[in-house]
Length: 157
Length: 141
Image 1 (cartoon, chains in turn brown, blue):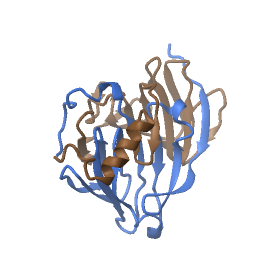
Image 2 (cartoon, helix red, strand yellow; image 1 turned 90 degrees about the vertical axis):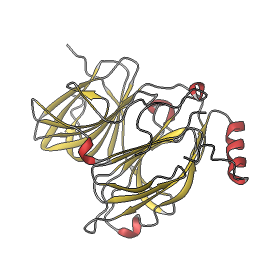
Image 3 (spheres, helix red, strand yellow; image 1 turned 120 degrees about the vertical axis):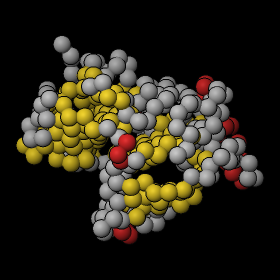
Image 4 (tube, chains in turn cyan, purple; image 1 turned 45 degrees about the vertical axis):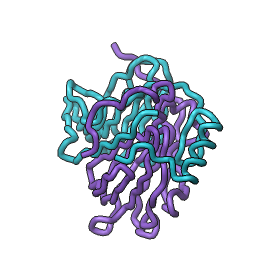
């Protein structure tokens, strides 16, 4: 298994990109308008963006074929699918389908702030035991056995 | 011309208990794993009442996932088995690749009486690549 890795990024190290049309984007992971975020070399090639739009502002962002895309609204309201024209509000999670090559948003009258995530599906079996996620039950049993006998940590620094 | 993707599923995050009794909102997790792949879950612990979050997430193990904590307000005191210790303040992010295993804790603290939102999520690490060399990048701080 790969060694553990810890990345801590201070607020000032996260670039903010102002786009034409009134979008302000904090780029945590991924690239927008040629600006890349500080978190890199993650296997699922995720994007993690914190996006603020002014009143009625539009926003569109490309998504690679086969990659999943999801948004989580953390303030204001916005329309995330022109066909349904439904305003999504704070604490709403929305998942997009595979068809199409972009996510398109329009802010409501008071603007909207949301987190955008995308990533490459790993299509692995997932066996979940609380905070430990493995591929098989045997691996999960072994992990909990190692916790019991104090051999769980293989890379102490 | 870009073709916009269609919204196929939406929901409000739901109240649940996590950690040592933190009252938070879970946006997705567990039952929706196939459709959110590569993401496993997203928890939102923005809260106004200290009793909802001060119990925090004391020492617990992780293996095989990545955990991400993004602070919108307030701060989280963090420590882990690799010897990292410090705070994750508003606007900062902490991205942990658990790999073969870590033990860590995250204890939310209010600033000016408020805790900021913290969406956190885990991504599975591909087992097929688990025997490879460590991923290059920032090792610690």
